[in-house]
Each structure stands twice: as C-alpha cells, then as structure tokens.
Length: 193
Image (cartoon, rainbow, N blue to C red; front, side, top):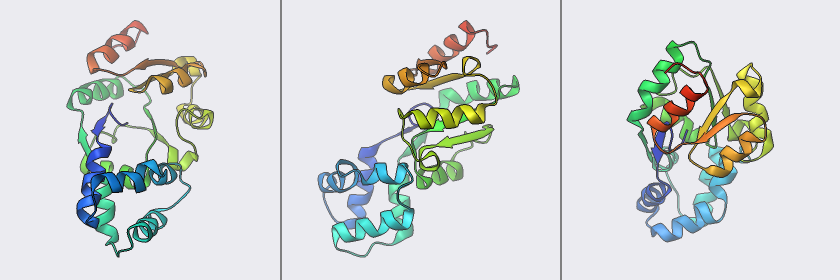
C-alpha cells in the first residue's frame, strides 16, 4: 500500500507528533521508530491504547488520544497515477488483495480519507497477520485470501526485499517505481490493462 497506492512520510509522522508533544523530531523518531514502537503496532503486538500509553510514558505528559492517532496517521497522500490502473484491473474482473505492513490507525485513516481501497476484495495487513514483510507468514496469509495459485498472482512493492520474498512463494512480483512500469509488467503476463 505504502508508496504504491498512497505515498507516506515517516518524517511527517515524527513532525506531527513532535508538534503535539513539544519535543524535537529527532527525539520522537528515537521513541517511535528507532525503539521499534511503530513496528510493534504494525505487527499487532500492541493496540492503539497501548501505543498511546507508551508515548505518554516516554514523554511524561498526557496526550489526547484522538489527536495522537491523527498525528500518527496524517502522513499519507494518494498516488493519483495508480487509480486508473486499479479501476481497470477491477473492471477487468481481477480479484484485488491488499498486502501491507500497516497499523489499524493507518488503515482507518486511509479508508476514511481515500477511496483507493474500495475496489479491494480482501486485505492482509501486518497487524492482523502478526507479521511484517518480508516474513513468510504474511505472504501465506495473502495467498490464502487470493483464492488462486501463487503463479496466478501479481504483487508489486517499492521495497526490493519484499518483492524477492514474494517470488520465493511463486508469486509474480515486480518492484514498483512508476505506474507505467507496473502496467507493462502486467501486460507481459497477459493481463489486459
């Protein structure tokens, strides 16, 4: 999802939270990303309430929960170039399955603010699967929702290691850089787009 369907910025998340808690972006980055707290919520190891409590403890201040969740999630903007391709795939009868390292907070924000996920038939998220890409478990979860053989699937991601991991499962996979490259990769597989 990230940097394919929607672009995002962890720096923006740190900036948003820094403004909320009155700390520097570097300090927020240390407590949020470098400490692994963000990856814990994305793995589903902690809830939004746990995330909130952890940051209150780390910064030794009370933080409004709604403001924190908004600050943590208002980091996305739509990849406009991918929208027509998603529409074409769906209208062509393709089953669309999201495979994403994401938190419940981020998924709720994206679903509320963008229509890009409306055409998807199923979702495999790291927080529900309990695993982050490139862990094998998340790919197996996605394949179970695809309702087809791995060699009938196509996956794209901006991170080469995640694409390589998908390929180990027999999935056709390509690194995402620009939508027209993804369109061409699909055409080479015989998909009409």
